[in-house]
Length: 171
Image (cartoon, rainbow, N blue to C red; front, side):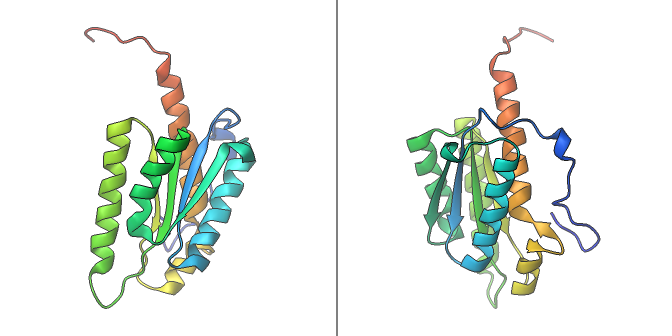
């Protein structure tokens, strides 16, 4: 999460695993397109910067953030990427719709990850207003799309590192 005191999109690039042998899915919500497309650009560029190949990154668009989990599930079933990154933006309004949507999306992505053993990354902004959204989509607080890409690379690398381990009995 970005804070008022720090740009959390800053990270040690040397600590990120090489993504050359990894495949990724990116699902982007069309609602709040100016914000979500900025998140996508940060995400996509970060994957490439860490070695991912453009032909191993599949992108799908869904109407809004609420549709991200189903879009992610369909993309994962069809393309079998190492990780799926979900990008969206739900700005708080006069009602509590943002709470319902954000909770539903976070819960669904968690369930998908647990059920499949595949990382489904929550890259959804949950700002109070459009200004905060812009600050987190390439503004003074960084780009949540960059953070989502870094998380996806790290989680995909973790999964790959554990695949070769033999199961042990006991401690």
